[in-house]
Length: 280
Image: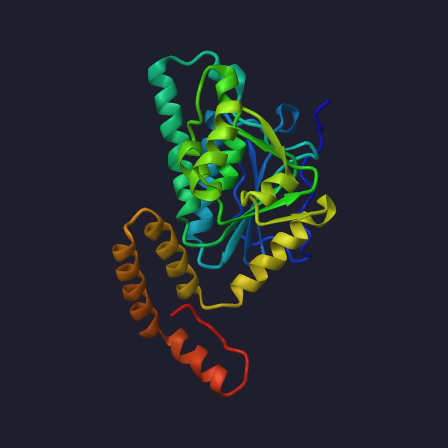
């Protein structure tokens, strides 16, 4: 049976920051410069329905707009699932028009996640199927527990991936592997997901959040403007031709060179000390 436990609190010992939102289907906490977003529907394996998509959008908009937040960790409540997919009871009732609207809603939320301007780490603690796999793919980095499972089983329901899966999966693992997963509707292990490049690392479940925090700590030590523009250059460059991508990179390189953080970073290097970046 699915676990009914709530998500464990983040492992950081710092107190929550002010202004934390209270949402129906998502636990949202901010501690130590990290926003923790936890899907909190464990009785249905954190399945995505319309209210949950809207809660996710609210949480990520807050994380985007809070200057104190340097990164986000996204995970699922309980010990069974990250996100097991769409809520089939809702999906079974939708018309063609409503289904397209639902797809657009999910795509819009995941575009927000992908282009947040801050790193988002998916801490995949169990099943990441359908919309769950699509949600993980929209994140900057994916860390999987060794018990996690991934798949795009929509064809088994007479559907196809509607949250960006047909677009992001080929970009991550290649066309052939993506089509095999999408057309078979099969499920793969965390280890296989790592082998094909779908996830960055596989760790013990007990180490999942701590490892995500450590990665964000490494990123947060760097210049915020450089991090944001690096994310933007990669995301925009993936959809541009090589020449346009190089031009964008050069433009952003110039922007970074005009910042106070560039002056601080180069001075600190030459003086053999740690830089104190201000995001300016």
